[in-house]
Length: 235
Ligand code: ADP
Ligand code: MG
Image (cartoon, rainbow, N blue to C red; front, side):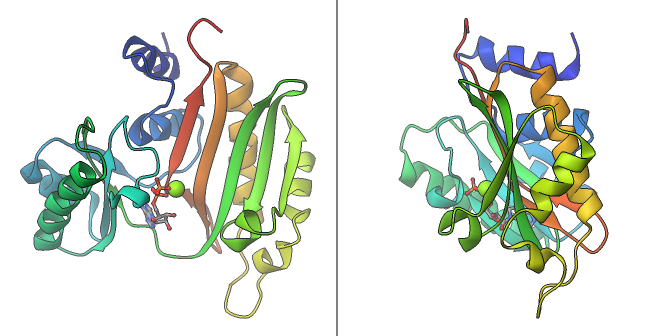
C-alpha cells in the first residue's frame, strides 16, 4: 500500500471521512504540493522540541476529529517566536478546544512553520455528481467569500486549463501585482492545481479537498491549511 492509501485506510479504520490536517498535508506532500514543515506534538515538551527543529516563528493548531474549523474554536495561534510563547499557546489551545467542545478528542497539537504573510489563494476540488472530480481556484478573502469569484474546470486539467483558471478570476490583477500586493509566481500556483488534479484523479474516494489558504509568493507558493473529505465508506 502506498502512503496515501495508508492514510486513507487509517481514517476509514477509525470511522472518519475527514482527514486530519497533518494527514491531509502528508497526502499533499506525496503529490508534490508544497506545505509548511510540520509535526504533531503529544506533549508541551514535544511541541517545544518540534518548534526548535522546525525553526521559529511557528504556528500551533489543534488536531481533533471533532473540530473542523480550527480558528472558530480558538485552535490556531500564529506567530510564535520562542519557547515561552509555544508553551503558552499549547495550553491556550487545549483550554479553548475543551471550552468549544467539552468532549472533543484531541489527537495532538500540530506545530508548523509560520509562512510569511502574502497574497492568499484557494485551491479546491469537489466531486460533482455529473462531471466527477472538479477543480476550483480563487483568491482568498472577500473575493471568494463575498464575490464568489472562483473558476472551475473538470479534472484532469492541462497546464493551459490551470493557467486559465488562475487568469480567469476577476481578482487576477491582484496576482499580477497591484498597490501593496506584489506580483506572485503564477507557475507555482499552476503547479499546485496540476498536482491537485493528479491527486483527485488517482483517488476517486476523495469527495472534497480544500487548500485554504495557499500563500503565493514572488517565487513559489506554500499551503498552510489542507482539508480532505472522503466519500462515505462503501461508496
Ligand atoms: P481553519 O481550520 O480555521 O481554516 P487554518 O489552518 O486555515 O485554520 O488557520 C487559520 C489562518 O491562520 C489561515 O487562514 C492563515 O491565514 C493563518 N495560518 C495558518 N497556518 C499558517 C502558517 N503555517 N503560516 C502562516 N499563516 C498561517
Ligand atoms: Mg483554513
